[in-house]
Image (cartoon, rainbow, N blue to C red; front, side, top):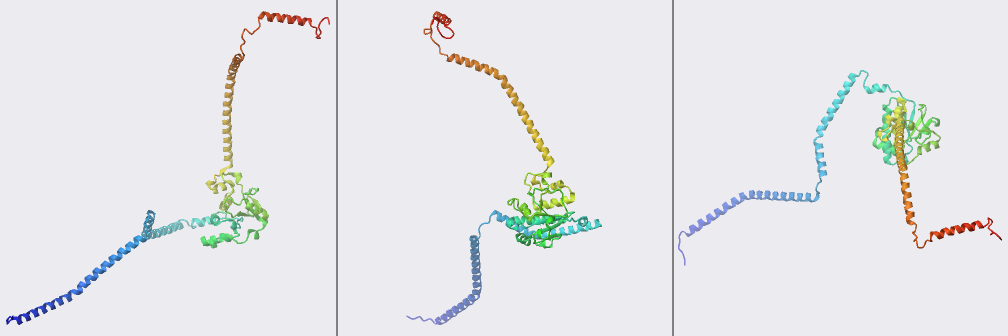
Length: 401
């Protein structure tokens, strides 16, 4: 079966052209849209990847870091505040420096002779007394005690520099742990002035006749300071572990020894062993005042419980009087009690006698009348006995024999 259609060829060609046109348009549109679509896809992928990475990082941080405590939070906050206030602190320091400079200028203008410090230093009179700190006990101390000794030496140096009558200050047997600690913590000691720091022992450069060792164990009591002598203070912080060591060393070296007259002026609750800087400062104060009691009470710390000896004697006598008064009251009360007992004793004796008589009466057994002999028989027996006695001679022989 055939179809005779003259326009069939024409319509087929038309359809073919339309189809090609549509294909071509579609290809153009797809080529234009493809880059934009790929870009958006890439951006979305990157965003997804970044979000995944951040989530993984947060998870890792949450697993690795432990929860922070309140104390750590406070420290972090303080550190943050300190860093924020750094500029403010710098500004305050600058203002403080300027203020000090202005004060110095005002002092210089007000004092025509110079500053107060220079004026005081002009009044200083150096003493010829030599005061030595013996540091030969280095091996007997632990590091903690070495640091304490270092601080005491620093205090001695500072007080000697301020004193109106500074002494000739010597530091002998300097070495070992003490020197090492001073090198580490106080490097400026090499620039100290008015001090003689020597590694040798004091007996090597000072005559034995001029030396006096200050030790609390000495039986000799120091009354006055001889400024031609050299007084030695034992540089030992031992918390009373090595009793009598400085006294023994002074005796072994054949050096004169003495103790400060502490017991003559002061009564303390604690032991009489003083720190190195206390002995040093007491001697400086005595050179200025020439009064031991004033020197002791100016320098001794309150924890020692220092009391003048005269007040201590008064308090002890007061305590004794109070004790005797209490004893008198007790004796009076005892006498009153004894008198009361004496007054009550006769009544008690009478009561005792009555009680004893009653007890004896009650204790005697009662004899019945049936067993007792008649009264007439007893009288006749007594008369017969008297007659018989008259007839007997004195020598015991009967009459008529």
